[in-house]
Image (tube, rainbow, N blue to C red):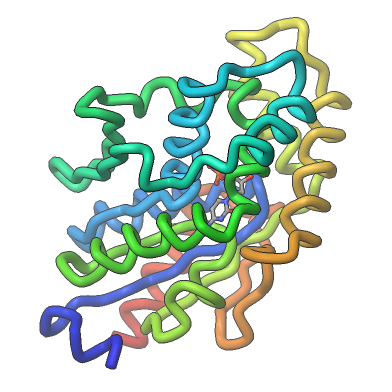
Length: 236
Ligand code: DC
């Protein structure tokens, strides 16, 4: 049985939610507080996307990239992708090169869906996640952590926020590096990603039925963190 393979007392806390809901920052803060490992599952999909881009290039646009990826049917085993943790911080290596700093570009983000929609890549990522969970207590964020990957998790949270609020947060984050970007553009991108995340055939964003749902639209980061820590304290 899954839970019997896990080390004694190892815990799994899942945090699912849409793009820009702040789940990753939150997961990191909770992990820091509990001295658990923070696992960012999206970053592993980003790592595989980076690997595919190294192999086939960006192509002219993401549709052509998607077509080339499908045509070449490159299996994930072709890449030597490794996830390591040092001081609870996740680092992704491709062929022993730390690629973590290169995973958040807009061009890469546009192309992730082809990789994240591929069942072999989902299987490969999930295998990595399961291995990590056997060795560490984890706080893990993603789209399908509490539903598909760790339905047995002890605690499940679903973090949401309105599109307006998520766009505003992302705008404030991106604007200093890209002053040409508009709030409206970001809102459109987020709405598109929401639609993609919710309607995909596998790995779709779903609310785990036994999760605690928190809408953070009107809450500060600290308020959400304190709320979750108090829930965990109450339940531990
Ligand atoms: O959380 P993020 O933005 O870094 O995730 C990047 C992409 O990876 C996101 O658009 C959807 C995909 N993803 C997924 O399919 N399943 C997950 N568990 C996490 C991310």
